[in-house]
Image (tube, rainbow, N blue to C red; front, side):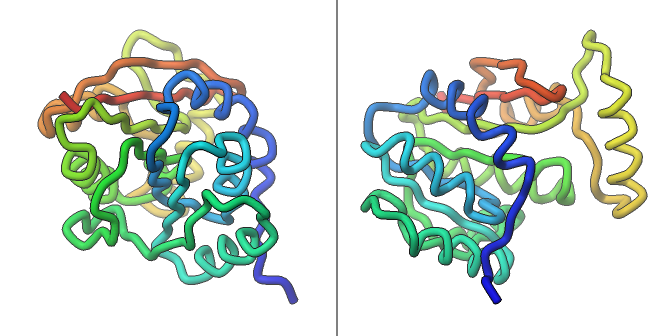
Length: 201
C-alpha cells in the first residue's frame, strides 16, 4: 500500500498559486514550505522553479512519509528531504535560514498559536533581507464580503475543532507588524481564496 497521500485541492489550486509565486519568488535561493501536507505542491513547485531549492516540512509523520514518497519519483535535484517542523514551536525549527517561506492552507486548520509561531519563525529566518512570507487560503477581510461558501467552511471547521477557523487578514497584518514585517501584496485567487505576501523590513 502506497504511503502517498492525495489532496484534490492541491491539483486544483497549484496553477493559480504558481502564477503568483512566479511574481514573488526570487531568481534563486531557498524556499521553506511550512505544512507541506501530501507533498504534491512541493514536487510541483520544485519542478516549476528549478533554480530554487525547495525545502518541504510538516509536523505529521504520515505527511513526511507521503512527501518522501513523492520526492522519490522526482527527477530534479532541487527538492530537499522533508523535515519535521511544528509551526507553533519556531525556536525548534530545523532550518537556519530561508529566502522565502510559503504556507498553504495551514492557518485556518491549526490553532492560532501555529500562526503566531509562523510569523515569529519567519521573522527570524528571513531576517532583514526583505525576504517574503507567502500565505494562501481563505481569510476574512474587513470591507470585503465573505462568500457564503467560506462562511459555511468556517462553521464546519469550528465544529470539527473550536481552535480552527478562518482568520481575519487584519489580525495577520497586526501579527506581522509585531515581528517587524509588513504586508506587501494581496492576490485574489479562484474559489474565494487569497494570497497574502509579507516582507521583512
